[in-house]
Length: 137
Image 1: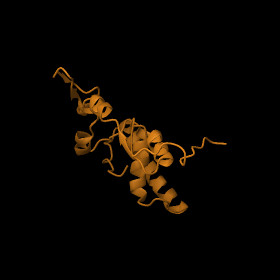
Image 2: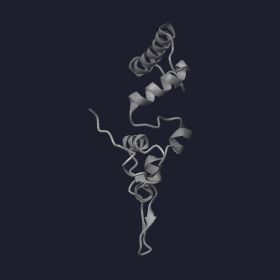
Image 3: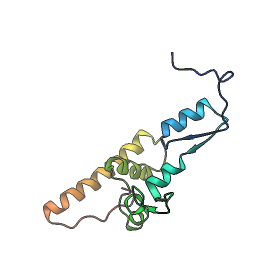
Image 4: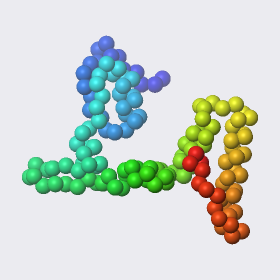
């Protein structure tokens, strides 16, 4: 039997501060549905934007915005994730243009995507120029 918490006798917090972990946020929201859930602001600033320590010294972010920001990559039209499979799946989803395509539409779009990918892979081998990048693939 999964863990169960008797909320009639347990704590009823109004605010809960948690780490930026989706599973923790979702579970906390289910256990305490009326509580306001917030991410730890110090963790966020320490990790992503930097902060001023008690001595007044500026502490740089652990991961500065130029490392994780996608604004420049978006303008350049390059993938915004290092996970190529996820990037391709997202682009393919945009190309199909619906959440649950029928099998024939799905196979037709998959066939088009495969032809496009084959053309890009084969072009350098046979000495031709690459086909233009398809913004939806």
